[in-house]
Amino acid sequence: MGKHFPGYQKAVEGVKKMDDAQLYEQIDCLFGRENLPTNPTHCDLLEEALFQLDFDFTDHSEDYPRNK
Image 1 (cartoon, helix red, strand yellow):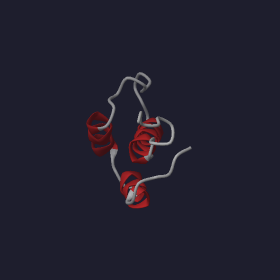
Image 2: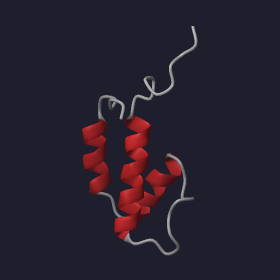
Image 3: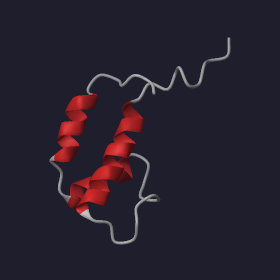
Image 4: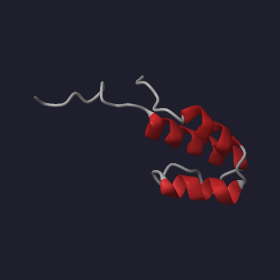
């Protein structure tokens, strides 16, 4: 897995403090609700938000080398 960009840990701490409405907003700002189950619990929302945040803060440059 790639390296995380600066601010990742602080962002994780912030997400862990969010209520359901805030988690929905975070998910919508990142990659959307497509992977949420029907009637998600708070734990489902938190897990998805953290997953999306992890992906968003990961440096994928090693996974997808630039053409020279």
